[in-house]
Every structure is written in C-alpha cells, then in structure tokens.
Amino acid sequence: RLVVGASGAAGNPITIQVGQDSGHNGVVVLDGTSAGNYHGIAIASKHYVKISGQVGSGSTQNIKVQNFYYNGIYISGAPSNLEIAYIEVTQNDRIGTAGSYGLRVTTTELATGLQADIHHCKFHNNTYTDEVYIGQTYAGTRTTYNQIKFHHNEVYDAHGDFIKVAAEGTSIYDNIIHSRGTYKSDHPDGIQAWSGYLAIYNNKFYGFHRTDDNNVNSYIRYNPSATETGKNPNPAYVWIYNNLFSETLPLSFAAGTNYRRGIELSPQPGTTLNHLYFMNNTMVGTNWFGLFLGFKTTHTTAHVSDIIIANNLFKDCSMTTS
Image 1: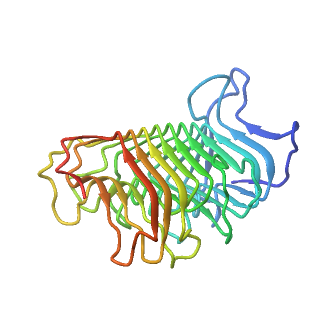
Image 2 (image 1 turned 30 degrees about the horizontal axis):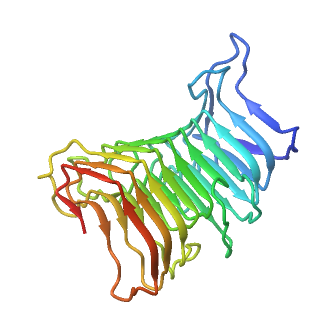
C-alpha cells in the first residue's frame, strides 16, 4: 500500500510517479491480496501532492491499485491541491465493507480552492458497492465549482452506482461512464447526487442495462434529502448539460424494477431547490423516461424556483418526460 505521510508546498509539490526512464517505466502494481485490512492509496489532510501513472505524454494508466480490503484510493480530512492521475483502480472493497469504494473522497475543507483533481484514471469492477464516492463530513457548503474535479476518467463494469456525489463544489466532466457489471447492491445509477454547486457536463453514458438483471435505474439521479446526514437539504446552482445518454437494448426490455431513465430529479420531503439547469442533453433509447421530475406532495412553489429545462434532445425514449 501507499500512505502519503507529508505535504508539499505551493511551487514545491511532492510528486510520486512511475519511472520515466526507458526500461524502468512499466506498470507499478499495488496489490492488497496479502496486505491486511488497508486502503490501497491513502492521503489524509495532505497538501500539494501529485500521484501519477503517466509516462511522458502517454495516455495509459501505469499505476494499478487492486485487491485491497477497503478503498482502492482514500482521500480524507482537509486536503488541498491533490492531483491523482493515470491510475487504474479495480477489484478493491473485497468483502463489501461499508464505506469502501474504488475511490472515496471525504473532505472537510471549507476554504475556496482546489481540494482534489482526479483525471485520466480508470475505475472498474470494484467488488461490491460503488465505483466512486465523493462526499463531505461538514455541515457547511462550498459556494464555487471546481473544488473537487473529476474529469477525463473512464468508469465501467460497476456492480452498484458508478459515481455518488455528496460534496459541494464538485465538477464532473469529460468522462466515459458505461457498461454495468453484474448486480450486487443498491439500485444502480450512473451518477447519484445530492449536493449544490455541482456541474455535470460533457460526459458520455451508455450500456447500463444487462439482460441478466433488471435493477438498473437512472443515468443521473439527483435526489437531495433533508433527513440523511451529509446531504444538502437546500441545494442550489446545479448544472447538468451537454451529456449524451445512449442505450442499445430494445425498449420492450422493461421487466421488473428496470426504470432506465436519462435524468431523474426526485427531491425528498423538506428540500428546497433553487437554480437548477438541465440543458443541451441528448437521451437515446431509454425504456422509461428521458427526463423525470418526481416532486413530493409537500413541495410547493415556495420550495422550488429557477429550474430551467431547455434544448434537450429525446430520441427513441419510451416516454419523453413526466
């Protein structure tokens, strides 16, 4: 395992990377099979640290984190200016331990500025729960975007949700999210989110449904809660735009609890919703709704303002909107 024990500084970061010299630049494998009950890579409240599996200007992931008991990568505490790049994370969370994922980010930092930049990684086949969890443990809110950035990654073969987001100030963009693994837990979504100051854009989603189970849910499920710990009951300034959602299985495949939807907005009782924008998304082949708005009977005009749905394209969806 790799535990980062020190911080760098502005202009003088700590860099941990694959060797760059010819003959010494292969794939570094961190394997937790015999490592005990640990995380693969652990970073707690450190600053100005970069971990990269990139060789030169290459595009492959030359660090692989696999078979750890808990999280493949665990970022916690109050970090800042972390960069995680070109790492493949697979087969972690070996026995389905609560709170363990391929990648888990749980930060408490409230100051503006970058906490973590995760890019050009692959997350797949982490064994039991979700591939990626980006969360918070504080009672306040961030009020800008890009404080946690997750971009140009590939997330696939998920057994639960692909990505969960419960942290303010998160931007998820230019990712490829595809191909459900065999069902093991939850009611799988592509991205399930509860936070405000959230931007989800330029992502490509496809191939969520499998013919051997019927538990698939929405590509993006936005369902803020007033009762669950760590979830903002009053989210604002959420942008979901320029995403592509695509399925190839026939619309007639809709057995059991298979509700394949493009975007779902389903706020829980007691929440207020302000400044939510769903724009320029393309939804193809969902066997349920391309766009689903599921308000509770307790929601009134006092709870909802400035929600704009514009310029979306629906093709071959069984039902377009509700």
